[in-house]
Image (cartoon, rainbow, N blue to C red; front, side, top):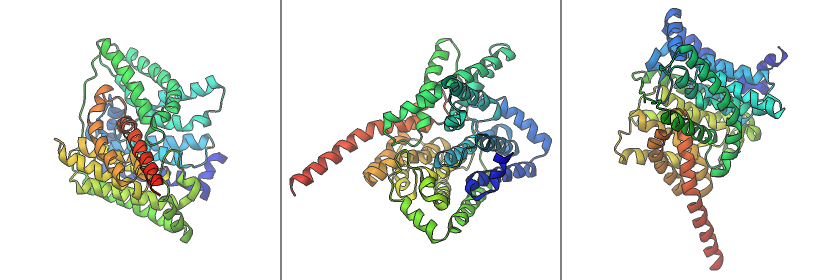
Length: 425
């Protein structure tokens, strides 16, 4: 109980803020729909296959989707609090990411086996579960793996559900090992490192299932018509965070300015360095993501909300307006020149998620940031075929390929440029 009482202190403000957001979403759910409609829709959500793109708003309705987001969000905050984990940039980001993807694939059924698998790994290592809290949050990228097997529709339902849960245990167990090693592949220039780990695991599982004759059928449940509601919600969240940030006075404004001096390369924890200054940064990023989506004529649906809330969360860990702007410019250019409609969700979402490559712009400059955004959209549009949509953080998977391609070239040219300048001094 003492641990939960800490949520009322200034030190735990980031967690308290998330509780407030999730409480607001739950209240909104019951304003929009009746309790019966919410619980019936919630049952549809937890028994859905949940592969990309399954927009829970389109699948079960607005109220049930908001209820699912709030339940998952509360669970994540309470898990961190029960583990006596203090707020850091990484877990602040993880909470926002968890909330965002609860619109399009995460629910309390499919995330619990994966989290338990991480717990089993901690027991195997004979280490405290609190050491693996980030993996426990972000392993949910593979939530569709659990649901896909549990609701396959080929065998008796109890057998499928049991198999899905057991597979979740196994996947959660191995996820931590793989994700910790994958950062070497992109040298910290892909902020969505867990997405690459999830993509590798999902790709292996997908090939195994396909070779067993189990077909993973694509789905496309995408909602529309809620732009006004979600624009008000997102801009309101931005406004509240801005007030929180500015209430810290000149020190927070100074901290916000200093954030822009960092490239954002993993691991750059803005909260640890600048405290509540991050709220100004997160507010700016949330408003920017929302504005870009609306300016492109897109729909603020489940996938778009996941992208915008992810942008917001990484305002505590790696992103700022200076390093995301070049990447967004490149991504928008790519979405305009490719064969897809820039306003279509299939294009808009990777455009917003391209900001996971913000450290490239922060380290190598605007031109390389624009190149990263441009390439990322193209890669993200097709790389999901490898894993059948069973990796929710598909853009993180795509971003690693983009970083692995660009970084050696950028490093070589930068080094040669320095050598030439030194030569002619």
